[in-house]
Image (cartoon, rainbow, N blue to C red; front, top):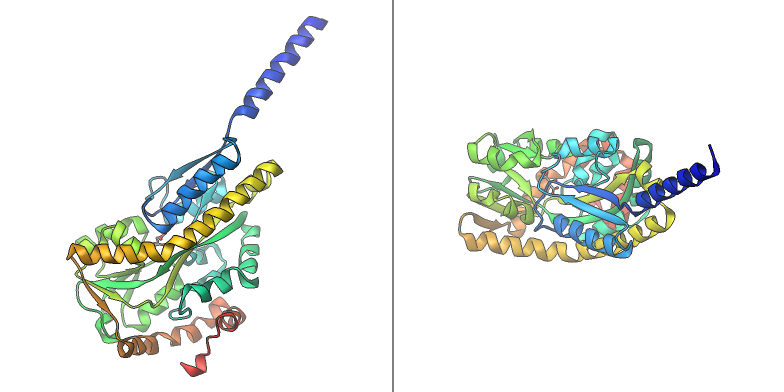
Length: 334
Ligand code: LMR
């Protein structure tokens, strides 16, 4: 090779390297809910901030409403690196083999989001994220949705009202035990299939925070909604560990800053989004909304609390007790 062709080859290599450097890093962020929900809005905020802080070196593509993957598939896609970010509900981590996450599904373990945040921002939250690492997953943040209501085509005011009903649940053994404690028949089903299953009577009822009941139009095919606040539904935003570790450090820091701010934003709007959704359902007149009285709530709680004990060997007694310590929950005083 003469000197000219060496220079030409070097120049070509340089141009290719420059072109590659100019290509933005793409983060495909897949999720199963509507854009107009706490998670949907959190994802949009992350996109806005990530693209801003990296000066366009990162491009975030959001795929909402299960358009790319459904619940179970998105977890696999993340591990395979087909998407770089997802935010499954905490109830969907059990099948990965990280059972501690199922503590969040225990009925009536949290009275409010403040108690929940003590857990997610404390030692337990860190430990949970550490347990994801061997699965090739890096935990980035916990995002709120809110407390769940029950729905069906009949009033669900007392535990006996649930007997024999087919109730759709997320893929969690704790939620399965919760429905069985009420004499209902739990049916695990992907979120994207729930509306149709309710409409066609494949299942009789379900549970979800109001933002999901509203944006998926479940209220249009459920005559009754019971505001029971019996359990919490929130998310862990997770990324493919190999992808994240492979990012250039400055870029990663910018993305961490974007995620921290998107998290504050998402958690700041979640409660209000759910309140607005409930009002919208009420205004539609399609579903009758019943808020449990203190006595009804006490009866439901009494029927559901044995699930804590029943699930202790699965979730880990230490994990449940650690949550009790953080929140001040005393099982003997219930
Ligand atoms: C559900 O499957 O009901 C929820 O986890 C959906 C979601 O992501 O909020």
